[in-house]
Length: 280
Image (cartoon, rainbow, N blue to C red):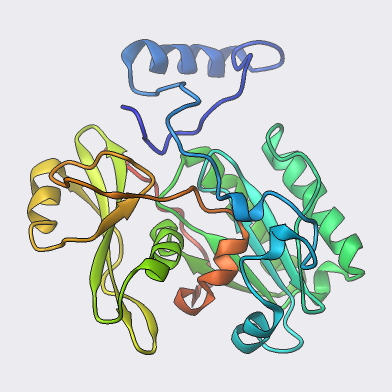
């Protein structure tokens, strides 16, 4: 199914050093149609975060330093980890600057994620022990990506004792879409969970800010359409949503948008991944 949250592999996926067992499983999944390998299933990541390694460049335009200081505190050092989507990313807020790594995160995900973290710490001139918070997207999202990101967050939590705060993937889309919504309006974020299931989360823009009305739910198609019967505003990463005439297409979030959604985060002692389609 086009537009699903399954990981988008790069070229030569089945060549090289992939274990034979994994290659067989992937080929079987493709032959059964349970995993689309198209690179066009997803819109491109949000262009606001494509440039600039620090807060002086366009890549940091998502949030002004004054806003971040107000939300996170003057001395806050926050690492944001986004691995729920095919394009993984990291961001670091330190010394009143937003830092983005130059490390290529499109290949060797686990190894490159640690390289990118080391690069960010060196650029900021700090140690891992100086991190105050870790923001992690716990899903709904892809199986492999979520586990890679959660492993990094939990390793840092256990080794340096920083606080881990979790966000839902829908929180990131909602934070982006809330800029287009009038106060008092309720809207939905919809994600294709495949096999005629959709993930749905409801939000409302209030005078005090964005509020999540309920946690994301994975619903069969008929229940999903019924839940949207009274909702006029629907957004997400898909140009077509069942029962919705004109959904708003949103870009795939990247790590800086976890900082944007900080107010929706919640402390967790052991983050559990939420897969787009729960195991059956």
